Image (cartoon, rainbow, N blue to C red; front, top):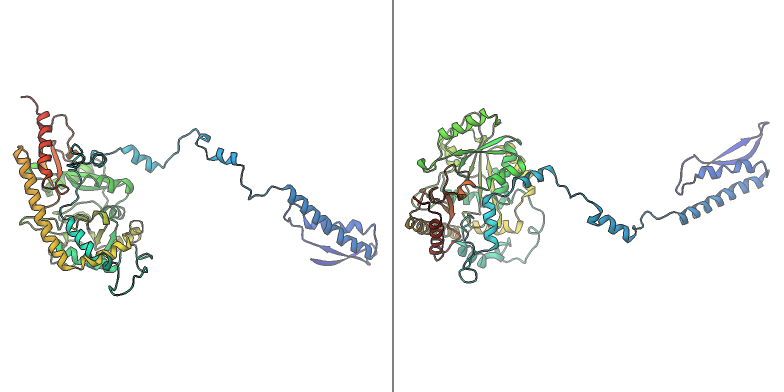
Length: 493
């Protein structure tokens, strides 16, 4: 408050006046307006009386004004009446359907592929030899249950110790429940690098610093798609290929996939000629590639092409065959390493799809930098990471597991293929993986939708049959069911 002196017409000091800048105050009244009442009071009461009344009356008026406004003003924090709340929240308040984004709508319009529809139906009514003998037998999911007993035995013996840094120390929650690097613990990266070198039997050394860990190989593929291509650009993929690529690559990145057909006459092997043909045809159609595409192996560097090598089955080779990694090729051929990226994971070779551990291995610093940031959205559980550090560091267990697993894979493959052969069904020659590529020719299956269409196989009648979810006792049941299907669809001659 500032005190000033007022002068009469003759210039003499008349009375003291308190003035306040004219600004609004709570309650809707103006404190400056109330205090200016002092001026007309001077004309009624002269001298000190005017000063006293001019001070008391405005303050009293201001107090009663605030009290009046407080009693008659509704509180802004008061909740709305219950009936109004129910009206606002009731779905009957709106007649239009709830909208989703255009991106979500695009995914909804794309529908469900036959591959995922089959997985869903089999999970809803699974086969059991005792409780549900007429249920679905799963032949579509590439999951290895042949060696789960070995993993279970290790976990039963080492689960607690694997979560502790020191077996003799008391349990410490720090490091397990707290934030850790989203792209993976360095200890696990080192363990995975050693494991990859062991299962791939390569002379190349994997550098943990060039590795980003993700929650499975699926986000690893998606992150690389984001890093290497813009929406509307395309990847070339040798077909038949894993049906999940259509969802993993396209759904959120907007990157297109162009199948590169491989044929039964070449045992579905990839050739340079088929790559060149698919590339040229796509460019004629106006498809943009820029400098990015998805080619797996066997292609010499040309036109600044990026190479993504999916090596998730590297350790699931059986027989006398050997796996050749892109890491090996880089050691011998003149490739631009900045354009080579490897995808790996523990779902297949270690029978741990539920642990969700995938790997991006790249020589490109920019890709690694972006992938490290994006790993925030698909990080691996920290307790799982600690557990796997211990498991992968157990060289005796890993060696025994890989040897036994390969033996079981080879045995089950031989039994399944022999069962199909007895039905007159041929299979493409295979040396690894969890399935066989069976030829149930178009003549036998006229009008039937073949599973190969989900894999983008251009030849009708081919089916991908996964045998690693079965037991040996299941194989005769599977063959009997296949025989019934074939007999019911044989075309008359």
